[in-house]
Image 1: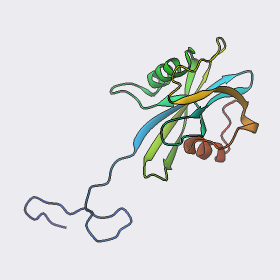
Image 2: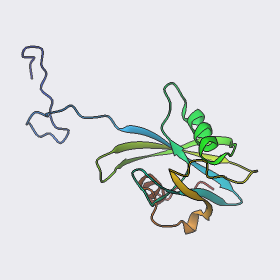
Image 3: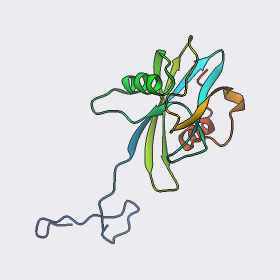
Length: 155
């Protein structure tokens, strides 16, 4: 393909030769924090955004210039009031949501040995509960479903 008038035609990632009407959008980045205590993981039921009604760990989007670990610490504190210890960057899931959003979610495994989780963002979460990794509630948020299906064990 050559340049014509400074325009480079875009092709579909599938190899389809028809030009794209819009360039592909890179995936969004997310961070999910698997907080462990007494052999259980902390999950909240999502409210008011994609994945509403699904169980998910605390997490969110990195702020500009923020590392994955910094995002994990900030999101957990903002959402639950907990201070995490020993954050370990874990696996990544790639998911396409039914509404078209495409995410790369990096999971962080961390401990929170003290304190009770508080629901500090009730417009985004119905509340926090501890679950055994072998008995997770349903439905799970898509990135957590993808992670669980790999056989990954955070414990």
